[in-house]
Amino acid sequence: MFFYVAKLGGFLLQPSNVLVGFVLFGLLISARGRWARAGRRLIWAGALGLAVCGFSPAANWLIQSLEDRFAKPDTLEGFDGIIVLGGAVDTIVTGGRGDTALTMSAERITITARLAEQLPEALIVHTGGQGIIVSQQATEAEGAARLFADFGISPDRVILEDASKNTWENAVLAKELVRPEPGQTWLLVTSAYHMPRAMGVFEKAGWTGVAAYPVDYRTRGKEDRMLGFGGASKGLRRFDVAFREWVGLTVYWMIGRSTAFFPAP
Image 1 (tube, one colour):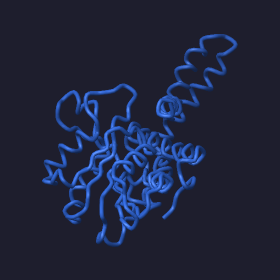
Image 2 (cartoon, helix red, strand yellow; image 1 turned 90 degrees about the vertical axis):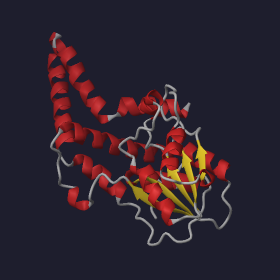
Image 3 (tube, rainbow, N blue to C red; image 1 turned 90 degrees about the horizontal axis):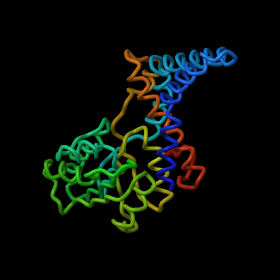
Image 4 (spheres, helix red, strand yellow; image 1 turned 180 degrees about the vertical axis):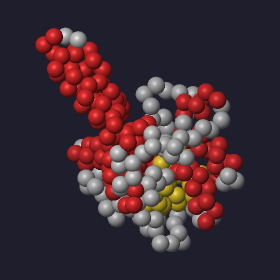
């Protein structure tokens, strides 16, 4: 139930959808006499919001603090395994085309190939099933397995968890499958903006010895705080991603699925 509520809520609360809704509803009611003024105000509010979120640095303000929360470890020696969170495989296109299609978060998969070479004895744990409401022909695990084989990673090193639909299930189901032993250490690979929530969730789920390895950065750092966007679609997409992550942090903390509102190293 939580999965469906989260998906529906994410759609309804997505800033770009809300702002477009303002404009459309404003147009609808502006033709009615007594609602005309309210309609015009909604149109202006929606249009102004779309412009601000699409062209201004607002999206970078939201996402940069998320990305800078966790840094990569100083050394890669001694890790027993690499945990890769789903999100890099487009299950819809993969299922339809029969070959692995990647999303904008592709670095979660591609950088894992480099880590696997640097840690030749480490297990590779990919956790991710189908994070969409309508089931498709492929899971993220299937797509990731194909790429790992292409990268030359032995199947004996790879553990695939293919039932999880969100970050909490990533942590819980992977732990049930892997059964990590006390004293083992793990690299957690996910997008930098998602790392605070992921670390809080994995710790809450009982994982120990987990170190963050953020990838898929969308900003250079603080120098991008005043950098706007040349296209509204780019700014709106980043604003939606960052806003969704802050909402996710809030909800996970409120329902007890994270160790803190904004987990820190």
